[in-house]
Image (cartoon, rainbow, N blue to C red):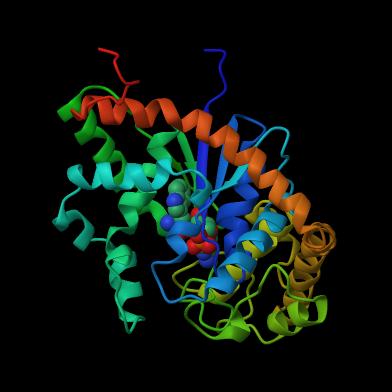
Amino acid sequence: MTSRPRIFSGIRASGDKTLGNYSGGFRQYVATQEHGDAFICIVDLHSITTAYEPEGLREATLSLAALLFATGLDPERSTVFAQSHVAAHAEAAWLLSAVTSFGELRRMTQFKDKSEQQEFISAGLFTYPVLMAGDILLYQAALVPVGDDQRQHIELARDVAERFNQRYGDTFTIPEGVIPDEGARIKNLQEPERLMSTTAGAPQGVVRMIDRPDVVRKKFKTAVTDSGSEIRHAPEEKPGISNLIEIMSVATGDPIASIESRYDGGGYGRFKDDVAEAVVALLEPIQQRYESLRDDPGELRRLLTVGADKARATSEPTLRAMYDRMGFVTPGAAGSA
Ligand code: AMP
Ligand code: TRP
């Protein structure tokens, strides 16, 4: 095969993006554009499933676009767009809800976790994985780069695709999740048993991609470590240090084993300082590009419009095939047969 694989991923336009998002998301998006045609979708329709402010959503959507380009997504090669600009996503979610069962959705751990944090549990929070399945399937994506927390959602998207293909005829490529071996679950620096996330856990343990260098340094200085003093990657036994080793590996590209041997016997204090410096060095150039992009919202809107046009043209044939195979009458010009 000479054709490049189709790659799709989505990222929510909400909250501040973290080092976890960088590791499981951004870093992978940029790497995959070397190997295939990447569609990276700012999933603003997903953002409304939990409490949010309309003005905040608008702001977060443009900020996220700036951050995606700042981390190295190249608009010439990759298609970056907002989900709400391509109506096919909302339509596909409705059509696919016919081949997704209540029982499947009820088993989703993200729904269980997030619904516990909400006062108002929206129907959209429950059907969220159907929208996500549609995102992926509309593009006939073969590969879906994500962090480990999305494993179950990807599995559901595959099941939904197989069920649709069986019931209505071969329509969808069965997608595969691409989850990095290292850094797929970056933990909160204060609570290394918990995923790093802006929606839960100690804020002091959450490193945001737009945190200033002094803030980053302070967060690493106060990171919890484990008993003993060995710098060794053993997530069960030494969750704090193992997390820091993974972060070091993500920030520098060095393999875990070489980090372990470099810091062998060096002590926790120096290691924490070095991880902080590696993260500062990673984030500083991203932040500089981010700020100049963010200063030009007109250009960001233009880039998103170009992306949406490409995404619309790419997803349209699949959406038409879905309607057709499901038995809907094709709309035609008046008088045509
Ligand atoms: P979200 O901001 O929730 O849309 O997540 C965007 C991407 O970041 C998804 O692929 C997630 O799996 C990934 N991600 C989120 N948190 C983490 C984390 N703590 N470690 C690794 N990947 C993460
Ligand atoms: N559910 C994903 C998350 O919370 C975001 C997402 C939406 C996504 N649609 C997607 C990820 C399609 C990959 C592919 O992070």
